[in-house]
Length: 341
Image (cartoon, rainbow, N blue to C red):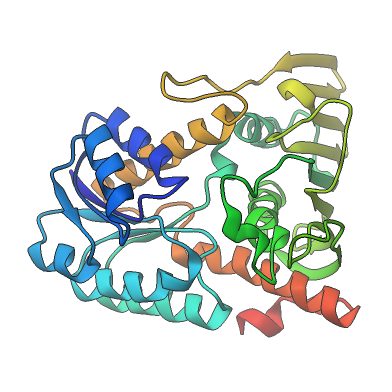
């Protein structure tokens, strides 16, 4: 299976490592407007076909899928370019600048009959998969309350300076992952109430958000995210999860410690991610999830089945992001049905 990558920036290097680890995948072409980045990534991963024009790369063809790892403003044009060439596509998150753009991209891919997956990798983290396995086992019964929490003071702006310039920041960049985890664990949500703050005066967008979700399953969840939280021990990039259920409780805490309490007693174990040969702490949790979602894409593409984080599925996560911004702006609860139509 041959692939091509568009965008050779900060995060795309992780994706290239993930592709190289899959024996059934060969990355045959890369594209970036910056010749220096093209050279660095091309040399590191021994890719000879290097383009500064996505149109030229698609014209030459010779690949079975494309991995779009650019910033959000270019996503629609690149996805629609892939659609015109009938090439299955993975698109980095956030999916699009607006929900209308995202809906148009999904519709175009469906009309063309090509798979479209969003690189929503946080649900593929080993500790999150472990939490999901406990829920699916029934060990703590039916959940009725949950919390997905990411609170940190880590400097994300040094590696991705564009994050400081956008009017939208933490919900769009990080909260989208946390909201997708909430959907993954508790099911789709129908109502959203959110509040936001900007604590760091040197950025344009919000760096703290607290969101309350009403899930169709009956679960009430809190999703809280912060890049303004100074803790004695920096937890970046760990996501913490708390779940109360009819027969017990679950807590995923610092250092990947999972505590499950139920009728049979209490057990605690570590559900730490694997430190892949090319990964580095503390990023290894996210880096492993990149490799896992890419493996999922290859398996589903080979089987002709829709990936779990397809464009169609991701519209529901994207709608939660839009609902959070609307709720924070208006100071009221937003009904998701009004956004998804």
